[in-house]
Structures are given as C-alpha cells and as structure tokens.
Length: 263
Length: 329
Image (cartoon, rainbow over all chains, first blue to last red; front, top):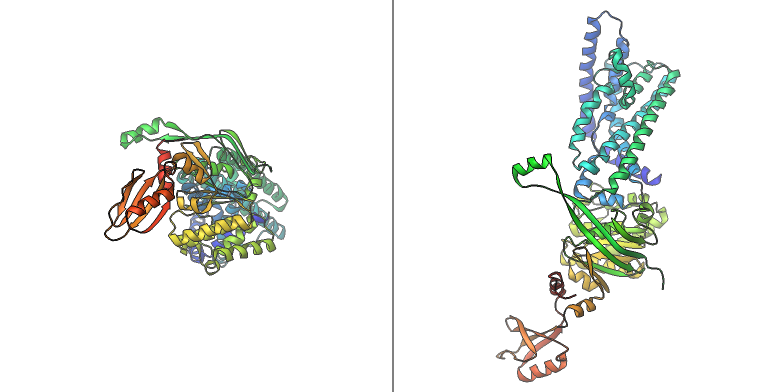
C-alpha cells in the first residue's frame, strides 16, 4: 500500500497548491448554484402539482451538487496523457507497482484534492446564502460521509477507465469531450434525478452515474432514509468494483499491444 | 560458472505501424481503409550477460536497441524467443523484475517536473518500498558521487540537461538495483557533463557491482567504459565481443600521425598511405601485418625530420560506419 499512499499524498500536496483555481471554482460554483436555485424556485412556484422532492430538498440537492462537482469531471488524467504521447509511460511500466492501481490512486487524489478544497467554502456559502439545511439526521449525516467517499471511489474508477482508453487512442480528446455529454444528464447535476419522469427512473438507476452525486445528495437530506442508505452505498461500491474489474481487464490487454512511442 | 544474469535467445519483436497516405486525398482514404506495415524491430537476437558486466549495446537508429531494453525491462512483450532476467521472464513477472532493475531513458525524465529532485527521490523510495534507513544511505551515497547536493532543492524543470541527467541516473539507482539499463544517457550533454556521467557509470559498476547495459551513439562512451560490445543492425546481432576484437574483425589498419619539422618534405613509403593533412600534421594509414609500427617509424624518421608522432587506432565511428554499410562480418 505504501507506494500508492505516497503517490496520493504527493499528488495531493501538488494539487493543493492551486489555491487561485480553488477560489475561482468556489466563485463559479457559488454563482451557478444561486442561478439554479432561482430557476428551480420559479418552477416550483409555477406548478401546483406535487413534486417528488420538496423545494427545500431540491435546493439542498443543488448545493451539494455544486459543492462536489469536482467528482463529475470525466476527463482523462492529463499527466498520463502526456506520458503516453511522449513515451514517458515506459517509466510507469518499469516501476514495481501495479499499473491499474497506480493510475486509479492517482485519479482518486486528483478528484479528491480540488473537491475537498472547494466543497467546504461552497457549503458554508450555501448555508449562509440560501437553503442548504443540515443532514436529515445524525445517521443520515454519517451515511452521507460514507456515500460521498464511495462516490469518490466510483468517480475515480470512471476516470481511470477514460485514462486507460489512452492506450488505444493516444490523445484522449474524444473521450474527454464525449463522456461528459453522455454522463452529465444521468448524474443529476443538470436536473436532480428524482425530478425525471417515472419511465426514466429505471434507466437512470441502472447506470453507474447516479452513484456519483445523486446517491450522496439524497442520503444527506434523507430522501433515501438512513435505513436504505446502506443498500444505496452497496450499489455505489458494486459499480466501483465492476468498473475496476473492467479497467483491469482492459489494461492487461492494452499493455500487451503497447507500442511505446519514440523507438 | 555462474548462471548468466540475462539470457536472451532468438528474441523477435515486430510492430504494426499504420501507414498514412500523403496529402488530403490520402488522409480521406485513410479514414475508410487503414493500411498497416509490419516493422520487424528484432529478428532473432541472442546473447547472455554475466553479473557485474558493463556492456555497450550499439547500433544505428532503429536497429532495435531500445526495443531490446524495453523487453528486458518488462515494458514490451516479445513475439517469440526466450528472455530471462535473473531467471524470470520480465514481461510475465513485470513487477518483481522492475524491483531489481533501474532504467534511464536519456531523452525522457522520470522525475516529477514540478517537484524538487529530493522529493522525487523520496517518492521513488516509497514506490520501490525501500526502507527509510536504506534509502537515506543509498541517496546520500549517490548525492555525493554525482555531486547533487546543490541541485536537490531546485524544481526539476529549472535544472539544466546535464544536471537533470545526473538526477535521473541517481533516481534509477536509489533502490540498489542489480541491473541498470541506460538508454542513451549522454545524449545532448556537453563534454564536461558526459565525462561526469561516464565516471559515475564506471564507479557504480565497480563499487556496487551493478551490471550495466548501455546503449549509445557516442563511441567515446563505449571506448571509455565498456569491455564488451554488442552490435546490432536491422534487428540482428552483428557482433558480440571486445572493442579491440571488433576493430580487428573489420580492419587491422592503424594510423600514424606525424608533426613534421619546419621545411621537412612529406614522407613517402611503400607500406604507408597518406589519408589526411592538416598544416604540418600528416595522417598515414598502414597495415601492422605488413609492417610493424617501430620499423615504419624508423624508416620514416630516418628520411624526414619529425617533431612529434603517435600511433592510434582508426576512430571507432569509421569502423561502425563500415559495418553498417554491410561490409565485413
């Protein structure tokens, strides 16, 4: 475990240096959060039908999404992309570590560091400005922390899969652009998943993306009550394991056909 | 005799390289149909290396040097043939193999660009699971040998190429590997930096007993360092033996270089041929089988006054060039 911990911590320290980026992120997410809250406020006022979530719940959902939006970046690992392009990836394979674990833990660090930096100020901002309430209960609060960690693991697994695609595509440009378009709608960051029509629910629930934002947000506000939270977290973990398994399969194939650039 | 540390038998590796048609029309055709060309990088190479050897692995660009190194490091999987490093197939047991080797690819760095070298070293120690005390001992030794102390706290991106290369070589040796692969470690370095790198390679081989395999285009590296050379061309091993043997195999000729005294005429001798002139300096070529060097020198100095003279082997570059052109062997 020591090599991976060292890599996570080095990467973490490096990313924590980007304080200006973090503040810019806080400002952007805070601003967008406010606008989205206002839009949903207007929707709720203009409709008299009963919604699957109360306005308060929707507002909390939105703020949690803004705070943890760093987990919803589907791009490839830029460092690995550069290494594949220049051939430096040869060094990665010359290390006595498992390549999948190396890339996976690096993804964990590169998702966790910016999210951690931005999450607290935005949550404070959201509580102060408008609408983000405390967790539904102490149990929900605990479950939320667990679910949020599971969301991080899941998000890192998706990112690692995108990174592994570099072994075939080299540039990674396509995946970095295409994946967000497909996935964002199904994470709940655009429209909270419970607000989708009934027919869409089974589809959304069968995708891994729900576990990245929707699950922790709904656990936080008790929309998934503390009793059912363990099932929801188990689902996040199951998806993580499935994607890790797929990633290992692909990386084993990818490295066999590897042509290290530059002779 | 001990079991060789590295055994390579009939190793072959080819790559599929997509071929692009030139021009816009070609690019459009490429979208519909891709053509691939099979490039055979290695066509059955065999050799064995004993522990503690310092071997020069030479050949022109594209000969298969780096491919061999990458197979030995477990990075590439060969198509056929046998390859064992310390009794293991490197690509099958890549992780165990990686723990016992150090690699430097001269054109790339293994250091973290934004971190000071010392932090890269600490990170590598963790990656190689080197216990803290061993790490500090090994690191301090390398820092001293390579004179890295003034560089350690500078971010790697601010180092000069020579400084960076010294740090890179140290990085490959922190975990005390039994084997060191150096792929063009002196590429792009100035004379002073080259000298420092060479001295260090010799020292690590002497003092730690590290087996070193060195690929290079710099024949001075080879002459200064290695007792044994492997010469590869177009994926085949052309020669395996000492540098002197390589010379002898291609050409027995020697050079006699004379600095003529003022007013002296150019020497003429039936057994020596003038191959170059620079001012008063004359380069003569002769075959030591036909005439022994002392005899030739006696004959020439008897006829014409000479200020200084020396005998040398033809530059190794010329020998290699001759080999590449497909003469000899």
